[in-house]
Image (cartoon, rainbow, N blue to C red):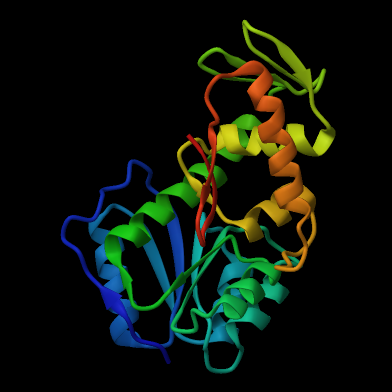
Length: 242
């Protein structure tokens, strides 16, 4: 059982309607979240223990799952690992366990986001919208566009080149995938664990400097095509393409 919800009446209203599964054993917290999500236009299904939540998550279709970590009958991380055998539904863990290792374990277990309790409802809503933009956009982008543009910059995935009116540079496959991810989520802070899973296809380790190396190389190539360095380091959170 975990408590910790700070409701903010200024929470941003989403522009997408979606089905959200809320797996939270504290009924007071669950009802508060479900009520707020309902006011914002989301359809919410509630589950109060891990085993029931897993069955619901597998047998029904949801656009997002909000998952408490400490649950009766089946722990949240174990639930997530079992769920990933059947579905790739985006999952955000909501937990009072907010230490760095807890977050790493959550991302390594297959979570798409991790929000420590207590949290502000505005932040929760913004994170929900970010995850839904990614998940609901997938069916419309199955053709995998090979060209991404940002003002004067063009990323050509087929040729693995970054082009501007001033110059063009060749990119490695990882650099091209990394830049595509940044361009797809411009203005969003992308955590290192997310980028490790999304781009490097391996679990995050704080002792592995591979991602930092690829970002550094990509930044160096940016200097040849743009006067602006758009890839920013957000201390303690990750990277953001601005």
